[in-house]
Amino acid sequence: MAIKSVLKMGEPLLLQQARPVEQFDIPQLHALIQDMRDTMADLNGAGLAAPQIGVSLQVVIFGFEKNQRYPDADEVPFTILLNPKLTPLSEDMEEDWEGCLSVPGMRGIVPRFVRLRYQGFDPYGTEIDRSVSGFHARVVQHECDHLQGILYPMRIRDFRQFGFTDVLFPGQQIIDD
Image (cartoon, rainbow, N blue to C red; front, side, top):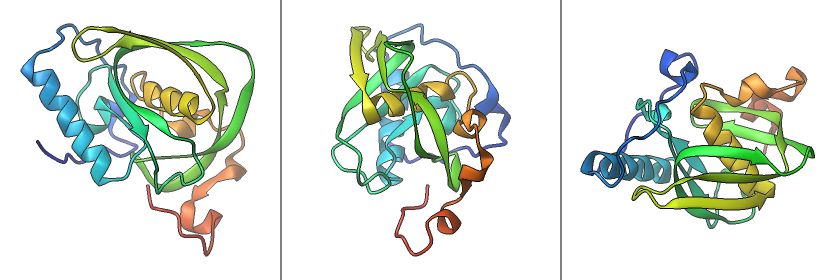
């Protein structure tokens, strides 16, 4: 299909709540998902939400075996998730570095639930129901935040731990977001 431009922080669409998907298994939905896959692969992303490419629908994709942007992260199975619902499985939270294709060149320490359950649908309308932890849980929360108009800097508690990647990690080869 096509590699799309990723909207950057400041674009109004990124601050809006996305609409639920109402029709499954239709050509327009499959084309959107293919565009998202192509775009995420081209940018070495760990995930991507439809609003990031200018489409206000509750569609996220995520997953990888190895990712240059997160070299120490465990594998996350590739998932296409529509109309997601997240439920924390405990109050335990963990802070860790995050970046975002819509906030290029920057990283910040973001608190996220360690364990959660996510539910939703695949592109064919089949239910998805998984309980996950660790980096998998972090990626799901990050991507689903995009569907609510939330970018990771909005979750940062200490802005001393937010900045440009090349300044925060001098001399390290970190792929630009």
